Amino acid sequence: MNKIIFLVFFILTPFVRAQIKTDSLVQTQKSTLKYEAFIVPVALIGYGIVGLESHTLKDLNQSTNNELKEHIDTQFTIDDISQYSPFLAVYALNAVGIKGKNNFKDRTVVLGTAYLIMGASVNIIKRTSNVERPDGSSNNSFPSGHTATAFMGAEFLYQEYKDVSIWYGVTGYAVAAGTGFFRMYNDRHWITDIAAGAGIGIVSTKLAYLLHPLIKKTIFKEKDANGLILPFYNGKEVGVGMSLVF
Image (cartoon, rainbow, N blue to C red; front, side):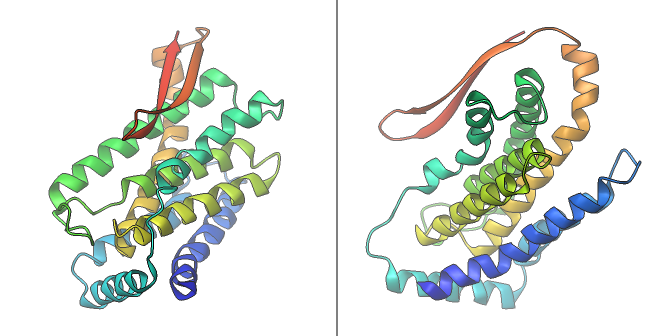
């Protein structure tokens, strides 16, 4: 088990560190579209895509999965909850008085845009990639939606609080990496699924921040907004509900 945990963080940690470092460097640039900020997530997505055909990465997928199966006694479902933790943390921090980058309206529009981009991307790719899950339950393994949601939230948390403390973002990314690990631990995804999901989640949030000024100007303008975000559990599924009034 320790080998697997090390492997997951060995793959994801360098990308996360590079992500934070890259964002710090591009903050000083005047260009509206900071291409450098997309290097890390695109590399993650590329790793996942290459893994669809690469025999080496497929072997790594299988060996990792086999190693996990040797240690699994009980399957944990913490990933069903942890995927939402990073972006819910933004609202929790604001609720206790630790203000981030944007007000409720703006950050919620950003989050909604990111969720839309991420959800659409993940579902379209899942329907076309036809990759069987490790447990054989279905053929929509690639990419990992849970991981995409978690990394979307981690990037959201980082962007909102990087000027307050970089450790908020680091914590968010740690939770996201843990979510990816448990998706493999629960025999639901391959490493390549996790990598691609992480990249999609990060890119979705970055695009949402880039699109926000245009969305704010053309759709929401300067209207006030009120809303509510609540998690839900119906006995079988865990999720988050969002209600906004503009």
